[in-house]
Image 1 (cartoon, rainbow, N blue to C red):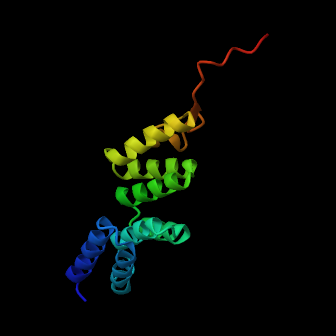
Image 2 (cartoon, rainbow, N blue to C red):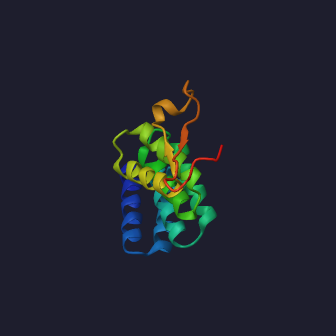
Image 3 (cartoon, rainbow, N blue to C red):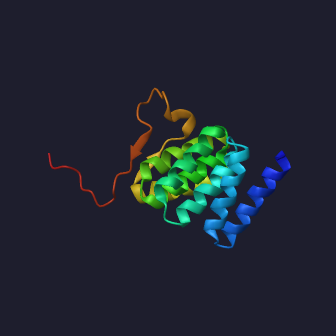
Length: 153
């Protein structure tokens, strides 16, 4: 099977996701992966299909494999971030948003999700470039609630 045929399988699987035919999407994505086991797009579609089917562990595995096969793909990290966010694992979602932004500093979805996560967690995430090994210390700065009163001294 040629590369073009694998691409067509992924397109077909994506179409089935849009049509909410998730079982068929997963089946076709698996066919693509039988031919090209390192195709991150096929893993991404498979992850979406599994997530929509409620097969969370399998979805997590597929999204993680997409990241492993395309470690410089902002889309792969963003998909994993959205998956973690949907599971309520906000710290992991923040990490994956940072990775997506590291790959593509203008990835709109990752930037928007990171902003939403900052609001929900009351944690201000430092820019990725300065968060690792930053001389100032922590990558996270906790926002002070306006309702907090200063401690009585």
